[in-house]
Length: 309
Length: 321
Image (cartoon, rainbow over all chains, first blue to last red):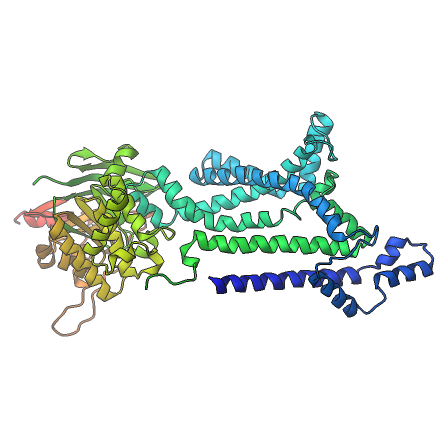
């Protein structure tokens, strides 16, 4: 178990280092922050002074080593725009993002999983087809289209809800629903196929053959098995709690991490972008690690320690 | 004799394709019946249909009675009491027939709770006794094992222990040894025989292996294309098969002694369910077929005590020329 955990932790660390390195290199190769931040018609001396101040005139590898050393010391750098610590800038946006993504995750789980199970249990019925048609519609429509559609109906036409901003809880409803619908659709399809796969297994027939009532077959025998593949996709959703709202935050002008990322990328505000990417990689990697551990708890075949003999 | 279970005119169709075309079969209390035939002839479907274990799209007709009580169309609550309690069933592939995420002990105690109302420590003790009874060593520790930690043969023993948990009057064993290697096969068959003697339960052994039947069963029913074509006491069937299909099956067995000879195969193949001939389904492959065989389904004709065959020729042989 410890060896298993150690290996997974090592792999997680390698993943994060790769993301950090990749982001560092690409950001510096894809545009000059000094030029963008100072403006196109800034005097060359000012641009040069800016470069010197941020250490941008040094070779890439020197910059990288310095940056990497700073990260290890807990310093994620400062914003080139206002000089504040990147971690503080990002940190103050996190609650706003979680205020959208956590309720959206609850909608995904609360609608997607029951809908998938119901569809599987009534396979090929009208109900199954209706659920699956909605699910296909739900995940083929991109979130920005769905978001605009909801704005058109509930903000513009009906006037029930605001179309953007963060002034009250009402402002959160449309972005939450937009994210919730897409995720619920994905989860419904995934749960349905996992459930159908399990219902076709011989041990389900065995349970019926020993007189287990059908409800108990579903709850006691089918669901624990169908949960195993479903956990993967739920883990992915948990992992994108921080980064999953980029598009929706932009559509609804919600001041979360996602909007900060868009603005920071446009400005080549290197430290802020890198800080966000590091955070995103860390949450995703943590969620994956949790999924791996959960697999072991759900599926005895994956536990590594030998039992009995 | 009073019948434990009686099947009359059982028909099953899936999406219009006929799987069973009127099966008549009965099992007496305590007897061991072999049900033989090749893959797809309807051996398993007969018993899955009888116990209501087929998927909802199956169209089922006829009658299945347990001590005179009709099972077809019975409420699911009643079927749940019959299944595992009065008629238990074990299957071909023991490894995938046990739930991979539950411990063995839990899977056995579940049946004990359902059919005998025992729970807690008493159930665990009884589960341990059952594992002992089916010959699993170190039963107390095995209760906490998962199916993947046991071998195929041991998993089949667990399946048998689970089946015994409800103290059934009949155990239907659907190809219980097909997925196991030969030495384990013999052990499982011996175990089934011994348990039958100990508990007095009846046994239906579904198999395509005539050798298995000869060793384990008192009576044999031969199935072909969704019907029973011949029934007889085991010794009589082997000595004096009346249906040309049974004769063909026996002819395909390698002889134990005498010179080596090429095995006689039955020419042709089983007709597709969608293209079943109107008369005897075996007629297109039968060397002795006559024009009349293609016209109507031959009824089962009694040929002696406990012996009957569904063949026009067998019927004619009774009438002295």
